[in-house]
Image (tube, rainbow, N blue to C red; front, side, top):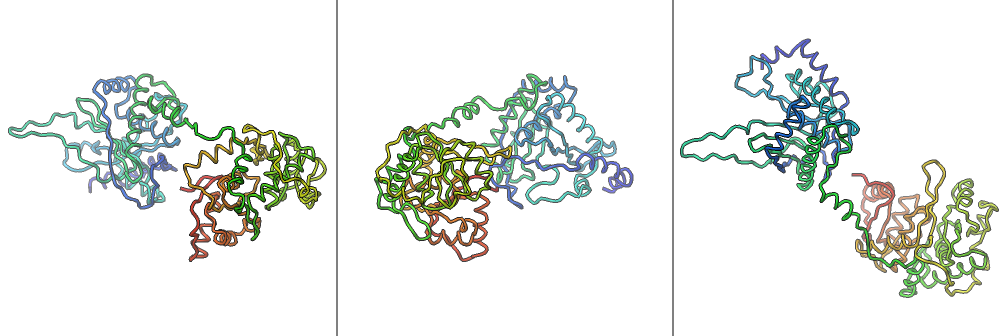
Length: 558
């Protein structure tokens, strides 16, 4: 130790530390997909999976290594880095590897523990060939060997890396090649000696790939943190490693991003099994047809609630029928696109159903949209009619025929169901997205798409007529379709949430409790605000009626 300190001090140490500073500056953690959430200060429980490559394949790898002018270690390490790149999608790949630490002649035969760890960093680009990456790894490895006598702990200290309790510093993955098992076991009179494989009770790293040479070939053991990964994932990773090695032996000039890793069974699973999305649903059904069937079953049940007022299924159906007749009398034909500009109200739901009962397609328009956007949506969709109320007449202009829900003509129409030309492939609605170019883009959704969504999801849930659904989202956002028909197809009660309540988490929480909501649909960001309010603002609050929280629109935080 004294000798080491004397050799590694002053200018010599500074030069070597400068090398490692340059090599590892800004190194990024390897963010491999995990099976279980990574927890700061989590366990380091270990487990392992094994793969054996025969002697013939080991010789193939040796021939490849000789042809490329590298060692077997470099070939296996490069293939491992390609595997990590393919799994993570990252180009900055840093892998740790132990070295004996006996380069100095003075300690070559000295008894003691001199092992050190090297951080071998590579830039892995999917467009480069394995051969070119292999040469880069060779240069990185040889250069690292020239500076291997700096203790890894001192390098970490010099880098001044911000520690993450959930990850090992600098690298999270280790690679080891052990040639020691090549030796024959000793023969002792009267004793039988066997090698015993011991389980891994703990691991310091996320992954540790250990390759052991023997006369039989290569024994590859993948030691992993079992609190992060499942054994099935690790077996699959070993299989992919083998496929990569086989591909590199066959042709080392292949682009590493184009080399197939999957087995035939996995290809079949992805292309056929996972893509077998055929589901049993009524392919000829329409939205309005399913709604009318529910009306026949529960005409006296409450369909809509708003601010203490209610509308029964039978009443909702009758008023929608009147709107359908009114639209027909006003010149709306089957297949027409009809704009609907209404605030959250009974009339909004009645209008949507009425448009579909007329055999037309609704185009939702929020009355709070800027006038320019409203005009664009009407013109772009080709809506010749817009269903609205007289208060919005000035907002909508004169480009289309305006049909008013609050006119005396609507209640005068018959309550019988209009005869309509409608099929499952008819367009149900057109939702305008924000558009990647800044201009809104209309997306056409057919009746069968909604029917399929609602009917094929039934095995996942047990929605029933006792459920209460809030219509939280704008009808310009297609989660509203799930909310509205999720309630109405199952005989549930749809609570229309006023606009000011949507914007006030305290008032919305009160509504959930008062209306005894059972099915809540939220974007993650909206739910996080609700969650914080319930848990931290009104700490004694509970939502005992709530059965489901269903997320859409955004990715959930890990």
